[in-house]
Image (cartoon, rainbow over all chains, first blue to last red):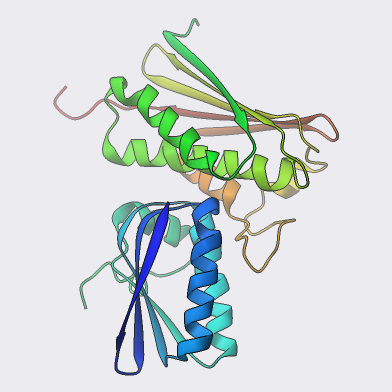
Length: 105
Length: 146
């Protein structure tokens, strides 16, 4: 089970993800994130993984898929506050630690 | 070598059972006092293997997934995830990072790469039309000072 709550900040839209992101949970997150990207048209969508306790490679598919949608609607995608367990999965996909926001900005 | 402790569960190939499978594995292995990263590695590998069964082994029907866990002396954990689905025609190709037969828009093709990175050993045996068995092996190293 995973949830997402949105919080706009100027031209940016924060998506605070929480729970466990697996193939099951990714399906509903995908719909909600794409809907937000299209209907709210932010300049930047920030995926915040601070509340995520577990993520497998389905989460990578979720990130890469949203990257693609963001690109088509002219938005940028950023990732922040990835916990250590996620960091290893992100590294495998070549999503860099800086992008993963392991350091506080 | 004889296992110290074993368990076996069977469940339907429904995506809601991905969290059940990794939760069951974590609960069974908790008494062997894994470190937090070790437990996370095991849960992630189980989640990948079970997701493969749900997405790839049974693409258009609900089948049965069987998971066994055996703990051997020296805290060596063997987990098998078995299905009776469509099988993998070319295991070597399927295990290549980024290779996926799933929807490339949403599947990263990293499932086996994650399993191989997080486990000590991954062995996949498959027969097209008969099913696939994934063996995951990881030794729980002793904590420092114990």
